[in-house]
Length: 184
Image (cartoon, rainbow, N blue to C red; front, top):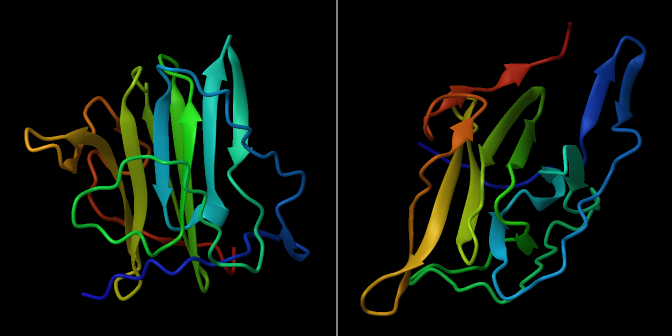
């Protein structure tokens, strides 16, 4: 099975009159970092991923970066790296406010097929998280992987499946079909 993690740089909305870029994008503004911040790393697909948090009853956030024609736009903020992992693909690291509902919205576009999976969780103080959207373009399916990054007894950083997470698509990190919106 071939997995493609190659991002597409432009998001289109298909309307009755044709297609158009998403209008009025809001962008994510990271909160100020403090000694007990939670941290999130988005692996790949950074130009089509959004982070939202509900602060004081108001949903804030948006896309983590513009849909530029630049495919690599890594924002390394010093999060620990998982032992044995090569971070040679685009990624984005940011603090998030702990203790409030957080949504990571991943979108993937492949030809006429799209995938949208929202992962909701409540980050805890001092914890580190990693999110990845995987797409199987041979079978037109995708899945979101949500992990916590923890240090083992040998001091090495590793990923463990994130507990207490809700996926919009399928329970757990299972594969689900992409959708075709062309011709509707």
